[in-house]
Image (cartoon, rainbow, N blue to C red; front, side, top):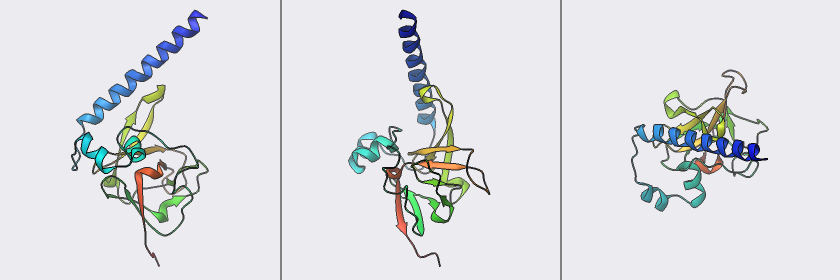
Length: 162
C-alpha cells in the first residue's frame, strides 16, 4: 500500500515538473501579440482564459464547433488571427473540431507538451501563443494530421465559399 502511494506521488511530481518545464519554454517564446495576464483575463471569458492561457480543455462533444460544418474560417478567439479553413475540417469522432491542416504553416506553432506524463504536440496560435489544442498523426490525407482543437479557443466566421 505504501509503495502505491509513493508511486502516485512520484508520478504527480513528474507531471508537475513536466508542466512547469513546458510552461517555462513557452514563456520564452516570442509572439507578436503581447499582453499581461490581467489584460487577457479582462478580454476573455473564464472558459476562454482557462483554455487559451492556462492550457485547459473542454469536455469532448460539448464545444460549439465540434459539429459545425458550415463554410467559413476559424480564427483565434484571443487575437482574431486566421487559423483554419472549413474546407480542411473533418469528422474525426474525437468530439473536438478537427482539421488536417492550418490555413498556412505560419498560422500556428507546434511545441512539445510533456504534461500529465505524456509527450504530445501542442498547437498554439502563432500570433498570441494561445493554446488551441494538440496535433496527432492519425488524420486523413493529404497530410495525415489531425489538429484536434478546443471550440472555446476558436471564433468562426461564416463565409460563402462558392
